[in-house]
Length: 155
Image (tube, rainbow, N blue to C red; front, side, top):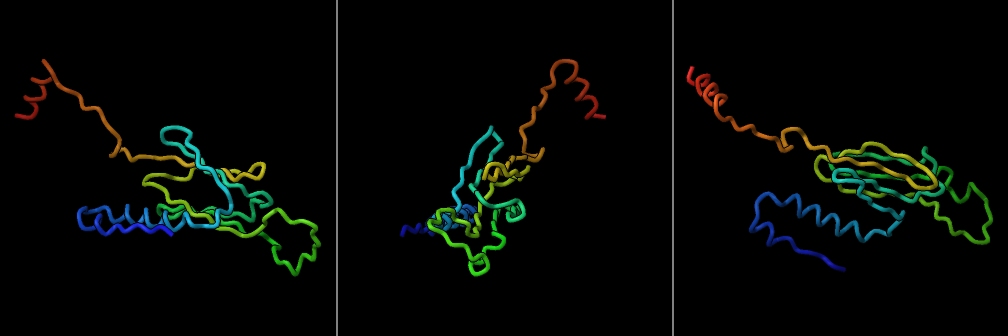
């Protein structure tokens, strides 16, 4: 089992405690059982898609919740009680067990939508920077415009 000690980071850097917590959380969650399998795809500079294999689940049995910077996907199989189904299997290879999968989202990443097709749950994400954080072009005044601006400031 690998663990990382972020104490030196806390001693020499200010304001990175959130990053260290995210790294610790990622290290813990990477030890999950790996169920269900998923892909994370980049669709462009600010667009992403998470695809989760949820074969056998209906949209009613799936729940997607975004809270703060965390996306949680849960699946609760309806009628998953073994005593109620009374089925006899010769081989049971389809895992219809309940699950919960968590994803840590970066700042300003929002869920744009979700769809279920062919056993894949697709969740579309978009990074939306506020106007204050976007680069903006500053015009440089020259010639007559500069003179007009200076006279307006003096008045």
